[in-house]
Image 1 (cartoon, helix red, strand yellow):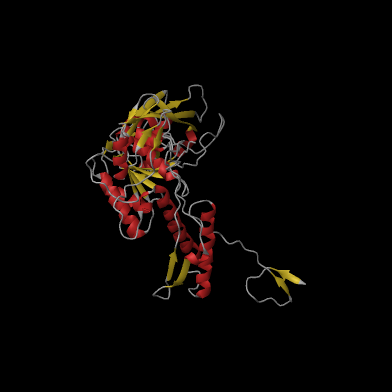
Image 2: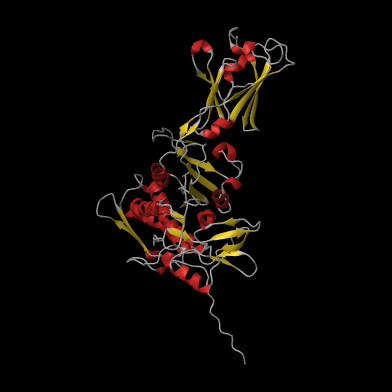
Length: 480
């Protein structure tokens, strides 16, 4: 019997022609563990806009800081987040250097005055007497060596750029060519013959070792409002935070207002964590969490509310939809700054503030994982003030958005059969949320999928029961 695969139905012989294909499942735009940190420091270095960072990133190269201890709010964010999108408003002019002794121009990778601390040392190997001598090119940030490259004289036009300095070969008849970053620069021995080098090329007359310091780098901060709008609307993140800014800064209210607009008008379910001080106006919104206190770490260092907000943002971004952070510990914290007594704690909770509490064992915990929603509007309940509930509802909204966009838009006919397919997909998904404790029991009748007002629209109604974590124990002990 004939067989095989088929492209069109044009086979002549009887037989079974079978194609086996894989259907790619919908992939969620997962942002779990990702925090967008709005830069509060003038770093004088780094890519303008968003720089993705992990705990293993080279922070000197990316931001111009020696370690996370130079940026406490960022350090605290990494105690909870797995990825931080750092919004850097650095701008200005890049430092550079050129010299008659060398055929290159070295330019800092990023603008800012940090570039003026960069230098490049070019050294000719004193022991190489061949016609194609070896050169060592070393890049330093301050006194720290950050890159070392060895290159033969015949390959000088291919000296690669590195993470700090961009290299341009500027000798060739007055023209400029950017170095090939993939060029092999260490090939060739004493008898190696590479490209012909013009005898007037300064590299042929170079002797000894010379240091070339980059100069004229300037910092001009970019308007944060423009950067912020773009990042909030287009980056993939779970939580944005203004940790590090003065508590009185207007940027906190700006972020809170923008998050509300994005959620309500664009359907992108993201949240914000901002520091807060008594007397300020609360956003009073379920997607904005307020941090009014700081903490004391085990080494005695004191973190104010705006720094501690970094950890809260990181932790909230990494929390699962079926997880509450109530009574979760603040890593390495041993006290609260300032401590609240019972009356003050209750007042802060009633005002929609996330409060830190010091337990008798010396640890510091989140008193209750709540957001700033206090005034309950029509269509919402008190449940919306709990971050676990908001995470669960946001998960349902975003997953439904992603599945509809990736598997149904333009692909499935809007008839009873097509709508039943979408309904079955959502029933399966919602039952999985019941299984992992994100929502309470779900019945197939709790979802309806019907045609909307237009032929291409679908109207969906889903009824779910939110789940919260145990927080209050009321017990009576009877003694006989």
